Length: 142
Image 1 (cartoon, rainbow, N blue to C red):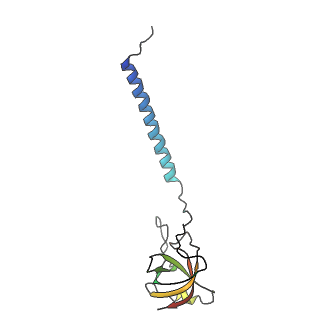
Image 2 (cartoon, rainbow, N blue to C red):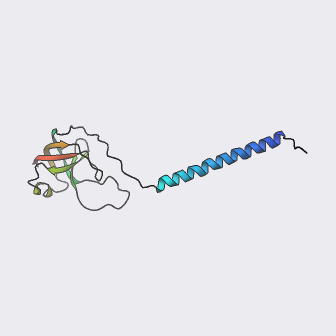
């Protein structure tokens, strides 16, 4: 004996199929989200927002700082990578002795010192520290 499909039966079937699709989408979304959350996070290359050209001689006034780490989601070491915070644009720059003959020039700096520096800008920001690039020092004025 053949069963007659009524309007009520059609609605029940449609609701069951729709519920199954919704449940499948939810399960799939949760599974994908868990896989993405469990995947190791890789830092992307820092985007250069530099206002200077590589090799350009620049002067700025600002504060000697320890450069902050880019990734602060886990443990952060306490070493100090000397840097400079430009008081005009609030951007960080790494510092390096221009010719490498006077490492004490940078090692002798004190954090929170306000200085005027002149140097050669190098567009070489790294992944470890927040910085726009490196300033190879030519001169330092207090």
